[in-house]
Image 1 (tube, rainbow, N blue to C red):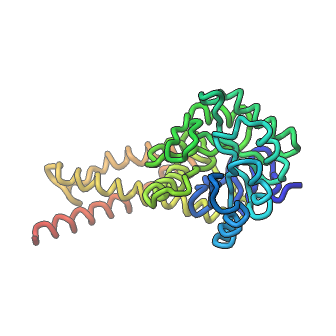
Image 2: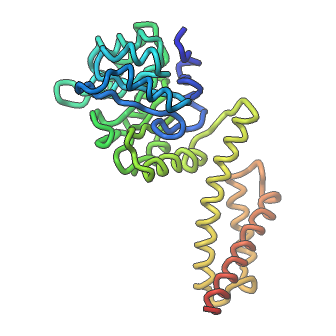
Image 3: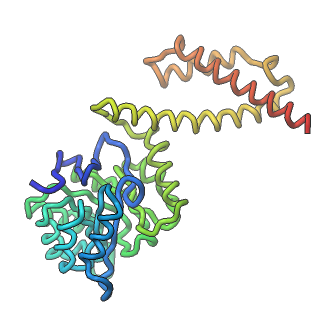
Length: 312
């Protein structure tokens, strides 16, 4: 079949990266995969540009052709082809790209100067599938040709996921502000522009790690994958514990009697019972010592902070 064979309609492999339902959220354009856009403006030949990108990056490489003339270079060196918004409603180019046998990342396009509807976008998906290529990943960037201008419609992205059962990416704009919302809305990955800043990449990676751990169920099938999933949950736990410690310190400053002497054991009991309703497999019996350790760590931190302030 294709160079990066389809695992199923809801999971697509691009090089050694798998995108889909029940899998980790990926960042395309970051450490998970690279994205190269060919400009088609009379610059260096596409083959040389893509070959250089391939030589400098061992991981999955996706390339967006400027025209059908770039497709042979994509086929020789890339792991996947990106059909950008400006080309996504060109059935000739879409079909030619699909025939490469590579996975296709298909952005929502532009039709007659307006953004394509969901139905028009899905027609382009059907054009790919008609060429025998089912390794299709949808990407919602708001139909914007330039990555920095991306403004994804997350409701439409979710609808495309539900209608097709295929993986979906959310194209992020220049500030990455929608990264967390995109993950919460069901994005299987985040697409950042080739020139994205370190801040945008960090925002995307944080959303793919921390937000995904809270809202996205995973079904790892190997030991390494299971450990990776636990690492993401632990990252979310650490983030929440840091936030809790800050709030607990504020409470200690507001209470008439703070510190260990001011503990409200009845409130702590109700807290554990409320948590047990969210974590029934652990139950109050196992949660009680965990929360006791968390509370005491917060109290010790508050005391250390107060003592340090008094010494200054």
